[in-house]
Length: 194
Image (cartoon, rainbow, N blue to C red; front, side, top):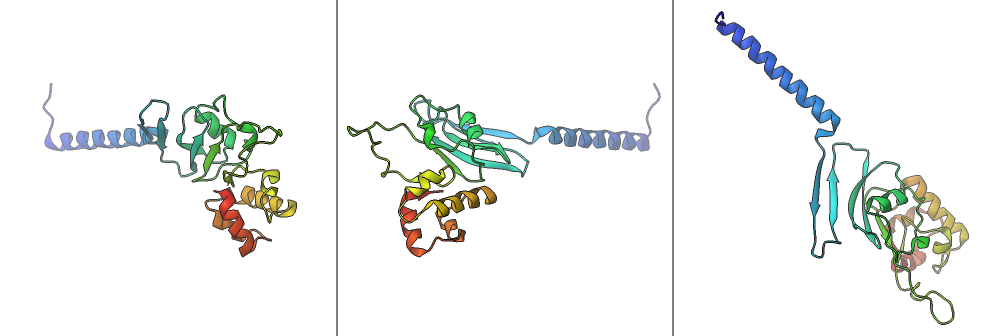
């Protein structure tokens, strides 16, 4: 076997390094940069998971409440609330999914709260509806109309604003919705969450 000269060895080494770099880029382009982190809390059923990916078009949402695996999840842009609930293992048997707009678009940083069904009172009305805040990310026009100071037109404007802007990151964003003044904002802060 002939002996390699110093210049030939340098050329072969440069080619090997170039091939390694091209290979690393190919792997990175196929999702090789994605990493998953999972932190389990005591009891096993409260696992929280979070995925990190190099794609900037993803959304990060917090799914909590009556779901099998509450946690923070990365979802593709344009995903709906139903996809986030399914990603969290689906609703538990005690979930009150009728209170969640599963067709709503998700927004980055949104918290999706799946409430538990509440027992009906003796008069047949749902107990505790006034107690908890309503999620701006999933509230229906009918749910928003139940809040003092919000009529059907304003409720429709809120839902339209949410759909056009990809959701609400805070209750204060309601200032941008026509027809909501300072007095209404006070009532909304008590009854709504992002």
